[in-house]
Amino acid sequence: MNKSFMPAVKTAEELRELQLEGLKWTVNHAYHGSSFYRNRMDKEGVRPEDIQSLDDMKRLPFTTAQDLRSGYPFPLLAVPSEKVVRIHASSGTTGKRKVLCYTQKDIDDWADMFARCYEMAGLTRKDRVQIAVGYGLWTAGVGFQLGCERLGAMTVPVGPGSRDMHCELMVDLQSTVFCCTASMGLLMAEEIHRRNLRDKIGLRKVIFGAERHSEAMRRKIEEYFGIEESFDIPGLTELYGPGTGLECQKHEGIHYWADYYILEIVDPDTLEPVPPGETGEMVVTTLRKEAAPLIRYRTRDVTHLKPEPCSCGSVLPMHGPLLGRTDDMFIIRGVNIYPGQIDDVLSQESKVGSEYQVVLTRGDGQDHMTIRVERAESVSLSEDELIISRLEDTIRGHLFVRCNVELVDYGGLPRTERKSKRVFDEREVGIGVF
Image (tube, rainbow, N blue to C red; front, side, top):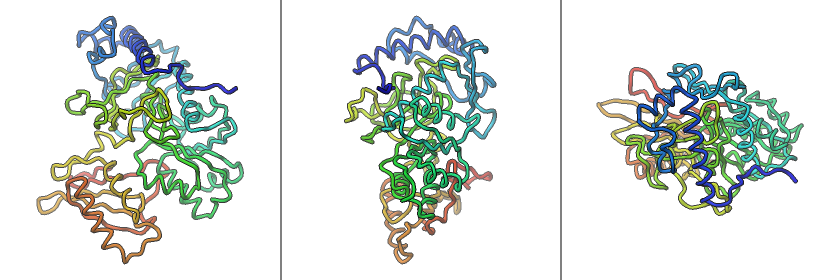
């Protein structure tokens, strides 16, 4: 019988007890092993023995990405360097990279978490998993491969690679699962469609993440690949890497591995907890991580907790899809907008595609927002006026700000193997891209 990677705990109460045990261990381990955490906790007047309940976590100080950059090259390190067997670094583009260290136990835990993702998605040892994310310092490729090998399925470790190579291997090896960023998923789905290969491949499932995606993008990926279903997978380098949760086959939300970390949702301005169901910033505290434990780490990712349990019966709680990042938010005429909100509105319009760009400009003393979106493949140019009017009204009704909508031909916006650029802010002297 194959090993299951699901948690041993069966009830919410057992899960809370496990979390408290892990929280106490993490705080004690970090305090005695990391000078950064010891100095931070001493400054706040809190010691490991003060943590006696999950509510006591609120006494602990927050940790930020700047703390990791300031501690370069080995921030938060809480074990002797000889216990570190690997490092990974963030894919950030400004300043020093955030370098994270891993012990062998950290690597093993990560492999188990990722194998759980595959198990939850319904994979077995008979699957052939084609991996189309980057390898190297970035955590993505090796994370997907770790979990695949731990599960016992066949790994096809291509990386982003070329479209020719991916198409060839999908046909020749009959890969059953494709792992990618959402943008790469769309790029390859369109390539399979363009080459008329849908009936020649054996793909059943796609697992994608690393960026916010719309329901329209997901539907297009599923249609062009001809697959049963797709899965959203979260993760960040600081928290092991990808594989820290997954949608189950009920697709009611993203189960997160609450036996490995505690997830809080806070108001990014006040840092106070928000009620379940309300949107805020994800804050994570690890429960088992040895080399670089996280205590109340502000991820900047924006989502909400799902207050109701999943109909699948899992004890693991859920959060919603990622709406964006707090540093992705832009302000137009006094209104705070996340790219994910635009995704949601565009997904409701069947006559446009999933690819779009937001261009912010300033003129006549006012800010202006233009949304360029692709016309769906089968839609005539004669319908443009009606579609534009409908979208502009819907956006104004949902986001409370006026915008101009421009329709472009299907395929007219750039495709990428990595993360798509969505927002172009041209209001300042420098041009910002998110």
